[in-house]
Amino acid sequence: MTKIKRWLFACIPKYVSNGFLLAIYRLFSVFGVPEFIREKNYRENCIRLEQTNWGFWHTPDIYIENQNEWETIRFGMGRHHNMRYSGCEIIAACNAWRALQGMTTRKQIAEFIRDFEAQGAALMGVFGVAPTVLASYFRKNGFFVETADGTDVLAAEKIGRSHSVMIATVYNDKVDITKQIHTVCITKNRDGRFLLHNAYFKDRAGQYRESDPYETVGEAVAHISRREPKLIYLIGIRHPF
Image (cartoon, rainbow, N blue to C red):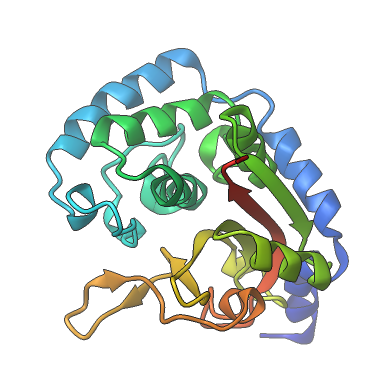
């Protein structure tokens, strides 16, 4: 890679502020996905999700870790209108919901997808869901939500201390925008350590799993990708009582 290419790829993660990036994301999500596409996707997803037998359907404390296996589940419209390609924010929201509320059914997840297609789908879903919409979604559903810009380390660590359920959006590589953006759910275990969900960890049998536990939320964020991730936005979610 030439020096010019490296500089160009690094421009957004290095020089564009998180606030500006989130504002652009939100702007891209203003129009949502047309209703007839949402309803078509919903009908197909209800059928296709019923045909799956993933372990998390049966156990409330197991999370969705296998985004790479969601290619047949529709999200948005366009060339890559599926959950494998751009569904990480929705999966993070589903995992956060499971952590807070317990089991989610196949029909509920189809409804999640339809809800975010209506409000939040960036460029009709090509860029996933605007992270700020995830925060708004949980607020609208009665949860207490705190957020932190990724550059505010103290605020992020405060959220980590006071919340057991979080959603983190990161650059997969802090010097290469072509490695894209990823969003995961983070939960705190009984020992107070942090687990990543849907960060593409696998066990010895090749099955997707949650991460090993980390001592701090910052350490967890540093392992969301195998490169050098950079935190953009952290959401802490809890019941208001």
